[in-house]
Length: 572
Image (tube, rainbow, N blue to C red; front, top):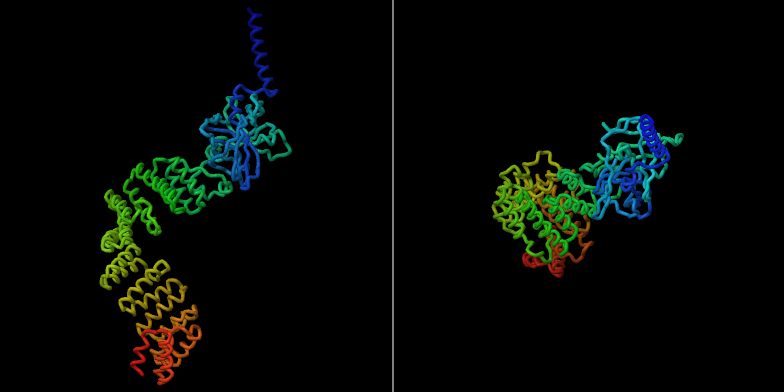
């Protein structure tokens, strides 16, 4: 019995040591042959389609999520993998990156298939434990490279950075490092220490898995240096913020791809369909584009959990489409259709924003009475602003309401600003000046013109000086009128209307010699301008130069001036 037991023990010892010997001689653990199917080669390309670099990576999910090194992808516009079976698959999107620790997470297009994926270990190998590097191979049998954990240190909180006693060849960078249970715990990284070829480094696979895209990733320099499409965040809120930011920072094609990704990832979110329809119409208004936008708007209404908001968005899109003045309206996309949609929104929830859009649509339809009623509701709400008060004033003006009513509304518009006025108030000051001028309230109008001038820091054109000069003339501020017309001419010497007005003011203050001089300069620029001769005739009459005046009147008559006959009859 004793001899039998000894033989059994010896047999077990021989089996144990033969297993250890086989590992030393490169024979692989039993999990290696299956695990090797998760490892692949990576090829990256620049924007001209030229190969940028080659490296390794491995799958960490059946859905195609994978890990590799950031350096391999930097500057790449496209990438593909070659899996263990030799099949080429395209890299679909970047899911996250960290340039400092040289890790990158991405997704591979699997075309409906599932990937063989490695399990990321939840445990940290202890110093001195044996680990294995699993290389990329297209062979059915894979020889792993064993090594030992020499050191580990903390990075980014609870994760590890490893120093390994393991010889690493260049072609092994970003291959998975496995524990004895066949789970990946780290990615192999390039050895920067050329003095010891038996030492390499590795970054915790759990840290690589935490890399993700969020709303701020659009400003991440590490990610922006990669031309491959970026994934959307996993949460709807973050993804929506990403869409908002990308709408102004991403080119139209890239934004369209993001919108498609959002709809595919969050098919129950109505906002994605509305945004995609809006972007579609911003790029083209042909029949195909309109049909796609219409389908998205219908789908948005179907899935919406807030019907009122979706009706509002639909109304806004159709309204803005009609504002483009299409030669032929698409189906029933009329202002009437937009009005019906916004009233559906109002029936769901009477919000000031909906009232504002209803007012805008009614105004476009020239239904000014109804538009005023709608905008009045807005002005009685917290949404009242300079633009809504101006809209109310504009409606009243087009309704031919008394001037005082229009001015009172413009006063409320201007009252939303605090003096000294800035450029934000400038257009409203100019509009009130126009309305006051039309109401023959020239002195207050002149004040508004002056406030406008200060609000824009004197950056005005010849047309402004012309308008203020006309107002000053009516306000009997003749010197100001003379100065403004002179400035208008300085800025635009070829506009003869300014010279004619300058001549009129000169005659008004008895400077007839100066008036004739101004008119002669104008005639030198355009000898066929009939009004100039009529004005010159009047100036000459004031100088008692009747013969010269008649000559000027006759020339005006010859050129077809309709007003000169009455003057000839009166004075000759």
